[in-house]
Amino acid sequence: MKLLIISFYYAPDLCAGSFRCSALVEALQDHDLDIEVVTTLPNRYAGFSADAVEYEQHGNVTIHRVQLPKHESGMFDQAKAFNSFYKFAKEVTKNQCYDAVFATSSRLFSAFLGARIARQKRLPLYLDIRDIFTDTLGDVLPSYLTWGAMPIVRQIERYTFNTAKRINLVSNGFSEYFSQRYADCEYRSFTNGIDREFIDAAPTSSKPLGGEGKIKVLYAGNLGEGQGLHKIIPSLARNLADECEFTVIGAGGRLEQLQRECAELPNVNLAPPVSRCALVDAYRSADVLFLHLNDYEAFEKVLPSKIFEYAALGKPIWAGVGGYAAEFLREKVDNCAVFAPGDVKEALSGLTELRLEEKPRDKFVAEFSRTRIMNAMANDVVQFIQTEK
Image (tube, rainbow, N blue to C red):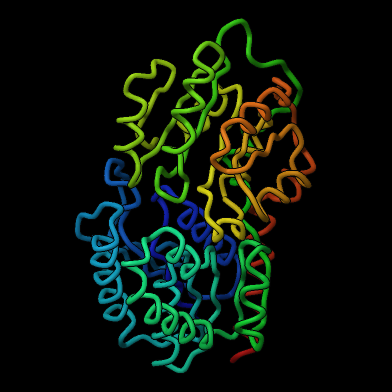
């Protein structure tokens, strides 16, 4: 059996899609399966580079990567990048035979690419969906940009999801949206999980945090409109000038605005993206791990992958999220203060509720080990191929 995997991001790129797809491929290697991955060279952050080659083969896995044109976070740049990826994928797969197509996607268009190839080659399609792009687009972009684009995007969405025979939803918060619109598809729910680096760094015993200095608060991740750090960090830093020191590691479309608004705040340190090894060290040095999503309706359905690595480290979590993510944190993660996105007053109150201690979350780590989840998903993908042959 031969499986085609489409993923815009793949190791060694630094993002949730890369980590997720790479872990699935690793799990699939243990099966009697030839795997062909079509992806890109590392491009998630313009300021971070990692070595990778355009073609490599390891056992039963073949990887094709394309170099994308330089791009930032703008919609036009992203459209150009995807167009390059689309043409590359169509060329690589043109004369190849497969038994099934698997595509993992957050911005819809990798899923659409998988659907195009699946239809043209009359193959079964398994989709892994990490976001609802139409929801996000409608919330994040101003109406004058979306009024003309949304009908086209919704048509692409219908084409894509009506092509799939099985869809995995990374967040259970997506379930209602999909069941109402695409009821004939089979659904699965394999969430994001905790990678080995963070499990290895998880504490084995409890210890106090904070010491005599300022509380060290860390955020690591994307700095875009979706995270809304520019709306919350400056206000928190001003209110907590004598109590907290904020470190923000990452890059994204709102970085410059965040830099401007924090320029006069000595207790805010902004740093570029780092390797996962350095990230683990940063987590270990922090007292509190910070998470925030912008106050948009679309984000009430998502389950940020950051939650899983944060929780594994046993540190207090300070999270400005709503909807399903808030429910998940309250149910699954102890020593976590959840506040409404953008609500400074509620955030400040939440901080006082946290216990400044590092404590193992063994049950959470066992339940959400990436290896366990991806092994189960790999079995499901293989069963899907066998059933559809």
